Amino acid sequence: MRDDFYIYWLCNIPGIGYAKIRGLLSEFGSPEAVYKASPDEIIFAMKKLTAQGVGSRECDGQDIPKTGVRFVKGDDKRLTESRYDTGMYDSYISLEKRGIRFTHPGRCDYPDRLRMIYDAPHILYYKGKLPGDAPSVAIIGTRNCSVYGRQMAYMLGRELAKEGVQIISGLAIGIDTHGHNGVIASGGKAFAVLGSGVDVCYPRCNIELYSNILQNGGILSEFAPGTEAKPGNFPVRNRIISALADVVVVVEAKKRSGSLITVEAALNQNKDVMAVPGRVQDVLSEGCNYLIKQGAHMVTCSSDVLGLLGINVLNNNKKNNFTLASEEEKVYGSICLIPKSIDTIIEETGFDAVKISEILLNLELTNYIEEVSKNYYVRKV
Image (cartoon, rainbow, N blue to C red):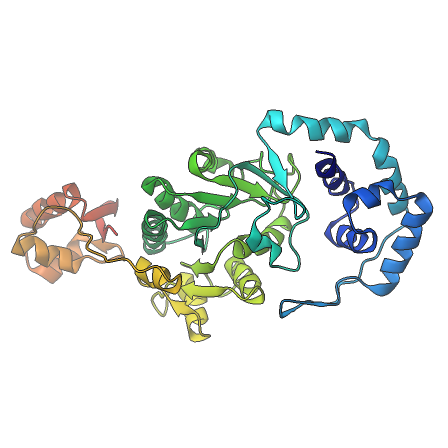
């Protein structure tokens, strides 16, 4: 418990961020040693680290840029005076009452996948559970997704979770949400990495999903409890999403997308990247099609991802026990994952409006298709 408090203390000193913490730990060896260091030792270490530029090294073949650490006037006082801040100890003690726990590299429950990256978080707060050793996939993509993207994310989340795969995402609206909803529907394990504290659901509209994830999975963040979501937090948290995954799957993304920041982090971490292809002129698929051109693995079904993970599944799944009549087959064959109007279906099949309406209703009732907006239909995956 004492070791836990030392790292909690070090990670919650205002003005002492990730790079400074890493530098202090490299100099003193442990959070406890930093805590017990004299003011003179702190000042000497700060001057030394500022001159050296901590971070110019190579780790497990990863190219790590020279970041440099620049301590500023007052940092030494922040470190020494915070030792007497009773409020910090009180907040540490209150974590468990609030259902919040944390882990760090000194603990055995710290995720092994995070240990493998050079910029692993010094502290990881969580509610619920931590990801285990099971195969893990990140499902990411645009917030303003299409029906096609929504269905693909849901299908991948559901089918992968059925095979025991952990699904990692960021709780954002759009692809993240639909991928996690698929996991929840299958009873699988979902984990959301936030750009806020674990006790701050962002976006607020996902509070139901936030609660559902806690049933079998967990909510994770390196940001202290109570931290509000800020734009600069999300690129930082994306490296944790990719690090916790064995494979990163981009379902739908623009050419300039935050999802590609996660992809860049994944490539730096030597992770496999996969992408769902889309229509050539669809702006929401530009990012995915670009990734595939650059060598990303293509995803058209869950077995593509499972195969890359080394999981072989005999797929005998059927939509249901119903057998489609020939007229229903013709209509069903006209419908795809892109919304299609009833007028277009009538034109392609040659059936009249009354017949088409009857067949569409039967296909809806048997869970083959879905009406996504008035008189527009897509297949259900």
